[in-house]
Length: 127
Image (cartoon, rainbow, N blue to C red):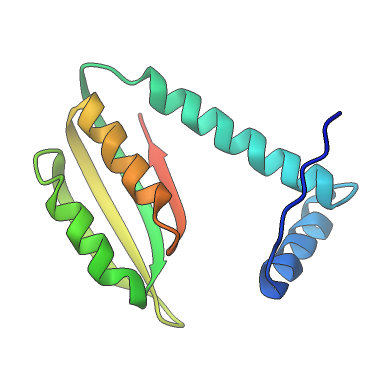
């Protein structure tokens, strides 16, 4: 099996180890493999989207990313039916987007949100 090295910040590593313990993974590698498998499954689901799509996109980010998120969302007003912004604790924000539109535009929007390094969590839900 090929070996891939990654660098994690101290806080991320501590959280990874907590997830490892809480979910019963045998080690960090197993937990990281599960995370990668989840990301791959989500990407496969997104690639299958076609035609007109109705979906929900959840995103969590720090307040410092607000300007970037606003720029991105204004570029995709054609597929955003509704958007809710909520301030969470500790300087975090939650964005909920109800999406309705062309699948290619929805995929592009999700990719732009996921590729933003300041996003902590981006999750597309397709009913």
